[in-house]
Structure formats: structure tokens, C-alpha cells
Length: 488
Image 1 (tube, rainbow, N blue to C red):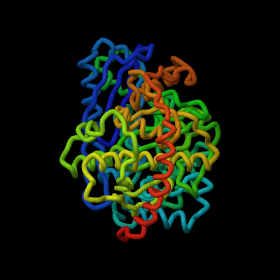
Image 2: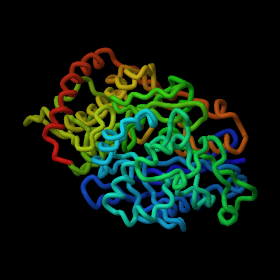
Image 3: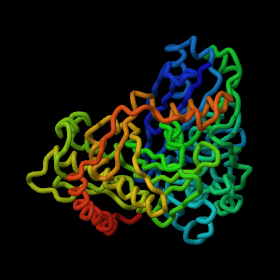
């Protein structure tokens, strides 16, 4: 039997087909575009997610047609928080507002200020990128569309609707809406009512390893699949990445160097830390939760520098050599789109400090890499203050291909960073693992085993000490930048 994972990301849809032994049989990736019609806005057409998903599975079918005929399960992973709004006939009402869309900052602040009891329900600060404040913005600015909203889906669940015809989500993804009672793992009528909605407008919520529908017959026929195919509940991209890397036991952790950055740690209980903007969400597996520190611009900061200097990212990094031996003289605050942990500020913006006549591409590139690492250190300290102890972490995400960057992260965090051994690790792989569970072919604790380690990057004592001194100065940037930020 084979199992398919589909990850609906911000920049692409990725698909991976695995066998019963979890060996990768085929992969595919189809790019996506993002629209930014106004400052702080970030949107995508939901139909583009579906077209890209179709194209990705078509590519899998072309690469491994015989293996795909034996498909028994599909798992879904996706970018979180996106407000996908449908009317009663399941027609898309407007472009989806994405996770990094900050237009609802005022609504998020007012919801938390006027109804502080919501924090006891959702266990998280109400952040502008969450789904609920986006609906408040819609009610205030596009009331005619708000009145037509019959169903609110998250990005991966819109793809599920096409795959199965059913409106279903999972607990991990639903945790990022600000409508879920995260401790009880169910929708909160109170939280929904505060934004003018009800549970009728929500998809059914299941565990990520449980069944969340069956593949429609016409799609099975299109892809040459011979038997019934269950579609797992799946998960938000970070929870499924944790499933892919085996970070499901309490205390297991990973650092994700993707478009955004995440420090993720599994927990055996619901453990919020609202004051420092720690995300406390349900995991994609039952009776398990997780904490996350989130950076909105991780590898995205490096991509921004690449555009600014008109130089490819690999060229910028290679100019640093195999490893750095001392901190850069240039400091960088990676708040290009605001920040979540620990600042929870949509208006905060990034900046360089320490620029002198001697500053060049190399010092600026190193400053960006270190700035992101320092932001991860903020996340680590926030998780620590919530009672979570992280002793080592796996590395995932596109930026994790750079051993130099991972070494900087290890030095700044003071933690060993483990590199997985050639496995197809990520949201799509984790989603395929959830499909195995939903198909009844394995218990999640056994299916979600960690991979072998290709390498471990140990923190270097001399650099750890040097970065600790720089960190103190770097932490002065955020309050200074907040003071000079443009009004919201």
C-alpha cells in the first residue's frame, strides 16, 4: 500500500508518496504566488491551491503510476490561519487572507482588550494573523461579504473539500483560529460569538491521525487508484512537520528555517504563556499539545536581502565560507512583517544597526543570519519561561540546508542541532504518516519515529559566549524600532 502527503504552503504545494516502509517513492512541487494589494495585506486565491494540488498529484501519477494505484490514504498539511470564506453553495467569496496578513491588528487588540476572558479559552494572545480577527475586519470593512459567509475553512481544508466534498479540519490547525477551546479540543461557542459567528459556520474538527473524509470516486478514477482512499485529518504545517521528524514525545523539538521561523516543542499538557506570545496549540496526534515560538520572517529575511543586493541567496551564503568565527559587526532585527514571539506586534519593523563604511555584503548577510538566530533565542527563552525545557532540536525547512546557518543557530541557542539523514522531512511527509494512521495501518507513536541523524552541530563554547554578549545589545533593537514604527 502507498500513502500520499500534500502540503499547501505559502510559496508552493508539495506532494510526497511513500510506501508501507515510509520510503519516498515520488515527490512533486508546484509554485504559488502571493498578492499584496496594500501594505500589510497578504492574499491568495484558494482555487490556486486546488489547481496546484491537482497538478502535484498529476506529477506523482506520472512519476510513479503503479505505486499510486495502491494508494490507501492521503494526509494534508497546510499554512495556518488563512481565512478561506465560502457561501452556502461553497463558492469562494474573496481572496483568502493569509497567516502573514496584518490588516486586522486593531481588531485583534480590541478583541483581547474588551474580552480578556477569551485568553482562558484559547490559551494564546489574539494575534493579527489568526483567523478570528480577520473575520472581525471583514465585518467592519466588507459587511456584504461577511453576511454571505456560510463556511470558514483553513487552506488545507479547502483542498480537502475538493478531495472529499466534506468540510473538516483538525485540532492543530483549528488551534490557530482563536475559536478553539485548545485545552478541551473543541470549538468554543463563546469565542465564536465574540466575532459574530457560530459553530454552524465551522468545519467538523477531528484529530489529525483520524479519518477526515474519503477521496471522491471521480478523482480516484482520474489518478488510476483502485480502492477506497481515506483522507486523514492532517494538521497545520508545523504540527505535520513535527510528525515527519518524530517530534511527538513530550520535550522533543525542532527548529524550522522556512519562510517564517518556528521553535517547536511537544508537550504532554496544554501549557500557555500568553504574556510572551507563545503559541500553545493542539498537536496533530491525540492527547498531545505543543508550544511554538514563531518568527514571521526567517528565510524570508534572507530572500529580502537577496532582492535588495541583487544577488542569489547561495552566493550570499557561500561568501561567508564554511563557518563564521566571530559575530558580525552588523546587527539585524528580522521584523520585516511585524513579529509574534515574544513581541506580538504587527507594527514592529526590522532594521540594521552598526552599519559603518566598512559594512559590506558579507557583514550584512552574516548579520541577517545572526538576527534570525537571536530571534530564535527569544523564542527559546519564552518557551523556557512557560516551563518547557528544550535540550536539543532537529533542523527542518529550506534554510536548514545551510550548515553554516545551523551552526550559528546552535551557537546562539546553546543547543545541539540535529540534521536528519537524507529523509524527505517536512509537512508533506508528516501528512503522509498521518494518512498511514488514518488508514488503520499503524499506531501514531510507532509511525512517527524520528529519523537517523546525518550530523549534529554542537554549540561552540567560544561563540556561545561571544553571542551572549551581542544578544544583550541586539535585544535593545526591538523597543527602539517599536518607538519609530509608523502608525498602524
